[in-house]
Image (cartoon, rainbow, N blue to C red; front, side, top):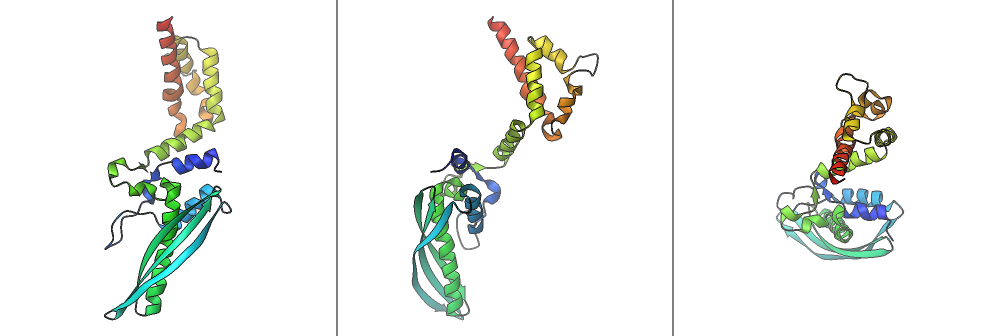
Length: 226
């Protein structure tokens, strides 16, 4: 069984930076095999998943001028979370000798089979790229990732939460919030508080919009409803 954290990771949109354009002569964006392995290690754990080869078939090799071209198919099974998923991949290899061509085809079919099995576990392994309508793909262009990092920073920032609690404890009206945040005739308000400057600089300016403005708006709404 997957943990809640693992499920959230698997359900997350695919990061745009991980998507590669198709190589010359091929079609379709893709995620590299080594990257899929890296993400599987991150999500499942190094000892939390395994790769099993079910079959490897040589479809044939032909000579094309001074080169050889070879074709393979391979079926792989991924074990993770107490379940398994299968995928069949194909590989085409080229080389000056038949051996070189076959070796390249084997490697490509292995990578393709593994990725096709891993895609059953969701977007992080390229499932999102199978949506033909690119506007509907679950792709994270960077905004969602940045928001998640900021949210985590705020959740783990003790001075942030202590300062927010202080505001709620001391302020019962919108006017009190305004005075607490910083009197118009001085700099002795919360902005000059030691706790405020203990908040990391990259999220410090978010405190006003996230906490102060939100709490003040709530008090105004409560007054109107009273």
